[in-house]
Length: 489
Ligand SMILES: Cc1ncc(COP(=O)(O)O)c(C=O)c1O
Image (cartoon, rainbow, N blue to C red; front, top):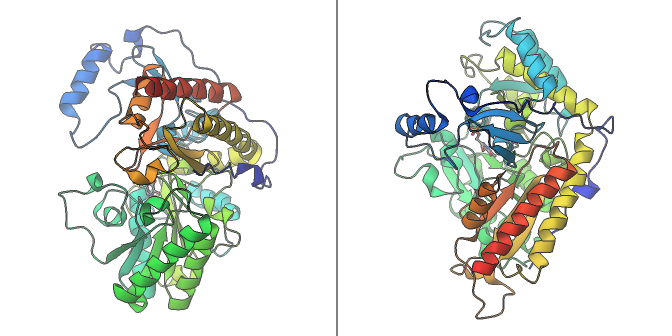
């Protein structure tokens, strides 16, 4: 069994200028259920019924709560139920719900300029956001930006740019990777079949190879990082020799920490190898930081865990504006110079209010000790999870604890998957559906946590401003949940 320690204690603190984390003001709790429903003509239950009838069945949902308010790490339902949010809107509200500085910046922008289509002229907040982001880049060559609305759109832009800049077509992605659900980004998504099943054909010219993760390579969880890297390198080499020629390959796209694939950090040695392969064959390295960026893993971008890594194109979204819809790609000037004006664009791309929120978000990163808090809470989280993974009552349930910063997962054992049973004495009864049962118990107790990947995994992505007390509360509920499943069998 492998229980990697948090990497956070070794992370640089250079970007934290002060030692305090300012939290949003506590929510005003005085409410009646009716007063908080979207429209007082319906009760919360009636609104939930309405949603079930009129929201597309194609949208999955954890629960049918109607959420009416969010503050910091707390969400409140129309019935006034408090939920401790360890999902952060899937890694988006990194500064907590409704951070006062971000909300104030957006509110002020609403009265100044809401929309200016980016193909008509520059607008001030677009340029100011670039100015703010430039010094945060993991490599100084990254200095030509294009903003879009969602992560998937930015992924598609990155593919378009890579194809145009190289004059080549094929893209290599990784098993377990997630890059979105549109036809281009969905073609690169390999974390679960549900995202695209029965809806093909997807974008052509995509090839997948193994990620340096034991599931992907079919080896036991205790396999050393060195061996995982060796095996994944071999698979990539085979792919380039047997399936897709380097001279036809435009780009390799990778998440430095796989998100929907199970919160699996990529070993730096493998990322360095990809850089070498790309340099050798004139292939572009696209690093997808949509989920891992903006201090989620303890550094501004997860790429920084691999010293000197130089992405040719980096994709960002989610945490950049703490909940306002904006994404982007950034490349070097040589790549940018190959693009035809007009080939990129979109009506709402780089919306002025979202840009203002993005600027305020970067200001908070500069002035509050977000990195320090991520380090401390990450240690606390890993300590709690590792103690469960080693605890007498629960160790037969947990296969691996992994992640970086506050992008952390627990993978449970699965009786039908022998790889996950490593180290368990023969004949041990492994409960079924552990993750789902643990998640349900947590939700009942007011803790929102998400599962992830096609394996039995629960992930923890609280806002980066999570307090020691909130982490304690969450870990208390999680421990109760795992012990309950262990007891019930
Ligand atoms: C790594 C990664 N890339 C791309 C996306 C797609 O982003 P969006 O949902 O904004 O389209 C996601 C979303 O979770 C992601 O985690």
